Length: 146
Image (tube, rainbow, N blue to C red; front, side, top):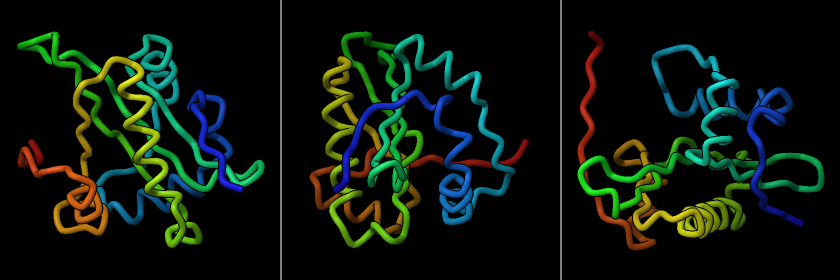
């Protein structure tokens, strides 16, 4: 039975390197995976980050991490920005991903967010899934190495 709960990233990250590596390989980032566990701890302690994990018994099979902050130009607008969302391949044909998304939205609202922003690569199944859930593309992020 799948259970989703909020966790402290620093306490679990050492046990789920295989999930992080799978997520990183799929995402296609062009830099090494080197999680800053101490930064995650500080962000969580400050209430600026939360991490949800999906467990099948004792085994983590997915996670969602997000950052919460008031908008710089209007602090009444509190945004929750996704940091990572991943579900192990064996669980992708289940409701695990949808449940992590819904729980991320719920926890974000509970923590004061009025807007949820998911960061995903354009044209991915996740992007299409989010649009089916009522999300609309809002920004384009462009990047170059400097």
